Length: 138
Ligand SMILES: Cc1cc2nc3c(=O)[nH]c(=O)nc-3n(C[C@H](O)[C@H](O)[C@H](O)COP(=O)(O)OP(=O)(O)OC[C@H]3O[C@@H](n4cnc5c(N)ncnc54)[C@H](O)[C@@H]3O)c2cc1C
Image (tube, rainbow, N blue to C red; front, side):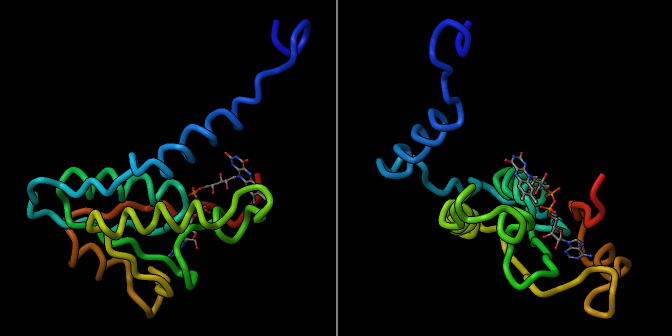
């Protein structure tokens, strides 16, 4: 009945304070893989979908490169959501963690154009993850 007969719990604030405390206390550290699979994966798009896939694949031992057409990774986390709603430092510290785990970022590359064709990407990597988001609102 929270929010009806008692004050509502602000779940977001609870979650944010837990993870902020974890970072401040040094509990969140890079988790590089213990062994490498020898497999390579290209992730196209560096929004939350691409970043989540890249982090899991890197930690599983695959060699992962994230391609992003914008000049910096993050997708809508960086270029859509305003600073007051999510400060970019949260994104940047997560990206730093990912780099230290071994994920490689290639910004300023638009896959499917002269920069890098889809065919070239498939030739070069064992697997390709498409996490390109949408520029068209529903
Ligand atoms: C103002 C605003 C507020 C929001 N608030 C919230 C919220 O509070 N909670 C919530 O859950 N969601 C929120 N969202 C929605 C959330 O941001 C999106 O659902 C989420 O970012 C989608 O993630 P994604 O990885 O699928 O795509 P995106 O974040 O769009 O990332 C896709 C990336 O792929 C890149 N890309 C596309 N094509 C290519 C190509 N050919 N080559 C290379 N790179 C390419 C793009 O440049 C982009 O960086 C908000 C969105 C906006 C705009």
